Figure 1 (cartoon, rainbow, N blue to C red):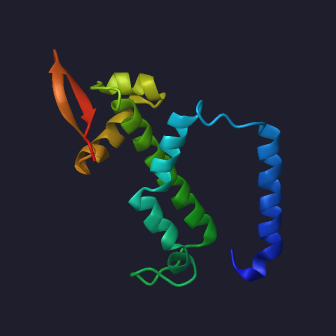
Figure 2: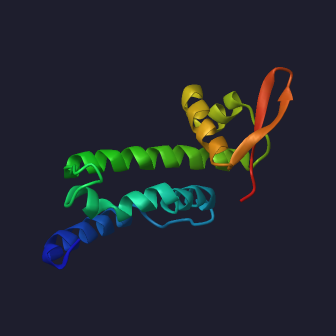
Figure 3: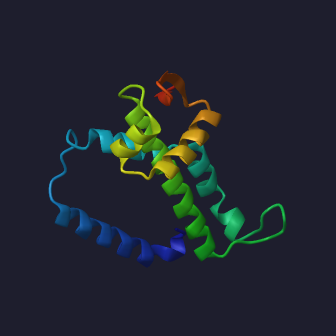
Length: 145
């Protein structure tokens, strides 16, 4: 937010504070795994790049001389956050050892198709790899960073 949006910022902080107070005390130990997943999402290069391009994409223009309206940018941002969150969930599950696609789906609550799509992205980026086969079922493992 800019300095001209002081009231909007104050309203946002007030709303966030109220919501936080309604949730009650936060147990960091109980939420350690979830916090690690959120941290992975927030530090992903793809999300950080998109956040850094906010003004370029919405106020100026992209390389094709196009601008995104704020709604389209927010929609794009939500999609990227969802995608990165799903990959972070899978990496977290794979940290426990080799898993099949169905086991990952069960562990994360994601549909099998979504697991397959995100797993392919993780393999392409070198963050997950085929570990072994159990019969005809492939099992995957998180690749150490």
